[in-house]
Image: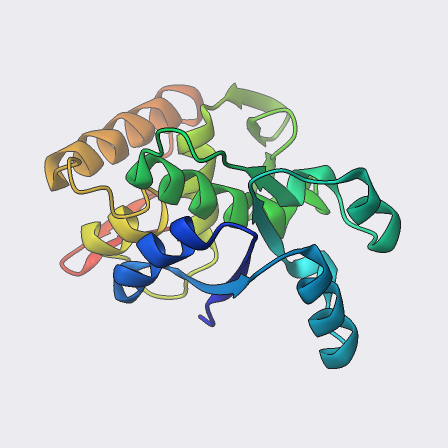
Length: 198
């Protein structure tokens, strides 16, 4: 899967930090000195701004007037304490969500996942899910092959160093149990030697 772009505008320190660990990120980072440089680059390269995510220190109202973007595409991060792994997790989740925001209902076999109401349903039976459960289902659902714990750590949790593999396994176990309890389906998330798959 091609890496998505994260435009970092006017936040060189954050860019430098992320650039140090770019090989471990599931997205590509691009640095812009200020909003004007970004706008000039966008116009010159005819970029699709609806598929972009932006990280800024402070956003001027003028930026919204010059470019038609949704507020959900913007993360405002100040110079104060930055917990980098939480930020990476937030970015990864935002990218996954952004992909599906235009489709409130996403189908996975006989199931329909409503991202907005955080529910999965089958045959008029509904089950409430947590944000992390939704992100896990969406990530696994868009893959054609089993995904390893490392893949899940990297793409759903943002490769947070403190999270151990058994945390992911426990999360999957609980989600499978929850699905089985409501729908009596033991095969919604299948376990393989190479990982998990929907």
